[in-house]
Structure formats: C-alpha cells, structure tokens
Length: 389
Ligand code: G
Ligand code: MN
Picture 1 (tube, rainbow, N blue to C red):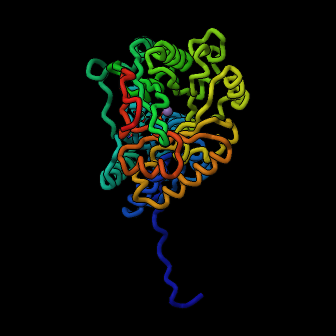
Picture 2: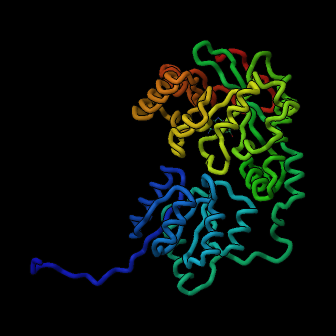
C-alpha cells in the first residue's frame, strides 16, 4: 500500500431509501438529497423496498403513497409489522384524510404533499432522524374529537359512490380529424372523497372496488345513448374489476353496447393479483368488447402488457407526448412505439395533447387517434365539434 494512503475515520453512513414509481421524480429526489450529503438508493415499488429494508440498515425512508401494487401506507404497515426501526416519511401528490390518518396512526415521521422543495425535504429528513434518535414522532397528535373529519368509512364511501358522476373527453381520428370516441372519466363531488384516486383508495381499502366499478359502468351505459351517433366509448377498468363476475354477465349494463365499448386497462397497475388476466381479456373479447392498454410508456410494467393482453388499442402516456416537438428522444420513442404497434395490428392513441405543436408531431408520427386538453376537455356533456378544428 502506498505510504501516502490516508485512513479516514469511518463516516456515519446515511442511506435514504427513496420509494418512488415516477422515474423523473425519483431521479430529482435522489440528486437533491445527494447534494445534501445523503447516500441514496431508489426503488420503484413497495416489494422492492421491503427487500432492501430486510437486507440492510437504512437511515430513513422517503416513500411516495401512490405506488403500483402495494402503496406507501401498505409499505409502512409492513415496516411496523416487521418491527423495522426506521424513520418513515410519506410523500403524496394526492393527499387524502384517509392516508393522512393512516400516516399518523402508523407513526410516519412526516406526511408531505408534493411538490416538496429539496431543502425542505432535507430539513424534514434531518428533523425526522433527530426525532428518531430521541424516539418521538414529529407529527402533531391527532385531536381526539372535532377538528379533523372522521376517516371516510363505509357510509361516506357509499354516498360518494352514489354521488359519483362521469365526464367525457373526446378522442379524435388524427388523419381525418373526425370525432372517434369519448373516454368516460370518474369524478366526485363528495367532500371527503373528491379525487377519483381517493375514491379508488377508499373503495379498495373497504373491499368495495367491484361496487365502484359497477357504478361507473352503469353510468357509462346510461350516458352512451346521448353521445353523437357512431362514436365509441372508452371506459376505464381497475384490474380488480377483472375479478368481478358482474363484468362478464350478459345482462351487465355495458354488455349490450359491447361492440361500441373499449375497455381500458392501465399499465400502471399490477396484474399480479389477477388470476389469469389473459383469459379474462379473452372472455371480454368474446363478449364483443375491445381492449386498450392505458398509460403505455409511463415506465411501469415495460411492454409486458402488450404480450399479455394483446390489446386492439394502446394509449401512449401523456408524459411521452408532452413537448414532443422539442424533444428528439421522445419523438423517436413514439415513432418506434407506433411502428411496433402497427406491426402488431394495434391502433395508437396519443394522450394528453395540449398544444398544436404536440398535435402536429404525434399526427406526423402516425398516431391514429388523439386526446387531450388541446382537443377537448372532459365535460359532463358530449357537446363537442364533430371534426377537429
Ligand atoms: O390514466 P388516464 O389516462 O385514464 O387518465 C386520464 C386523466 O388525464 C383524466 O383525469 C384527464 O382529466 C386527464 N387529462 C386528459 N387530457 C389531459 C391533458 O391534455 N393534459 C393533462 N395534464 N391531463 C389530461
Ligand atoms: Mn384512461
């Protein structure tokens, strides 16, 4: 060993586990924390995080709540059950009373709403680690009565499902400019369960996903006759809906409309909990439905879903469309997705088109259909131009 070697006293390792499924957000978080001197490790889902936590000591966890498969709260539950002693900071882009209360009850060190500025995140991490050394939570105690609304229980969920309504966003054929279809999107006015994600979370937690899905499909079938003649209707399915016998019944509300219905299954959700998704989808096809993969290219399950579900249509995630006119990489990705899909006989919808520039590029790259605020916002009525202006 050269005589000039200097031995440093081992520095305290401060490794933060970042659990975030959104790749750009994960990267930004990693870079920010490393600038503050933290070591980091990034994983994209709860299962991978569990592996890391069981394998080695971690200084703290910064975890997104909305993750594919098990969510951030589920991961925190696991950490508590496994008795892993680590400060756990939850971050969410979609704060709900339910998850906030879970965070408190499970002893999360922090519950932060995105976007979180880097120095803020660093400060909260320092605070959480200090508190952890001193063994007390830094979250305020939940008042025992009054101030905070009660978690949305079964009754709240029931009334939220009842008050649920749909809005419809047009999808245009990009070649001819003709109106092609609408996507039905779930909305809610319920005060505690306003966002569709909150509603889905609550329904999942209370084991009511099938009721929620049935309600959406009911509303979609009621609304469809008001749509301009000949248009198709895209309806989102939760992967859990594939396990609902009601979906396949001849008398189910959408069944009589099946040839006009495209069922969307998101790429973001895991198919792991569904037994034999391929067979489910085949059954739906035999009833006359067509299948679309939603959010393709959002960076979740890769292209597995294409092989698994053999969809008729794919919807390219809006992250691929955003600023595509100024981004040769995105342009090439979309170009090859289009050629891959067309080679397989699959039609392509570009989602989230907001500007004329984005529209022009996705059209010139051969995307068959387009959807986005730039072409039409979701609305309760089907009142849209029949040809793209
Ligand atoms: O996951 P899915 O593709 O089903 O989600 C569609 C969501 O995206 C809807 O909530 C809809 O309101 C929203 N949306 C639709 N068009 C646009 C758009 O052009 N820009 C953005 N930011 N969101 C959009
Ligand atoms: Mn969708």
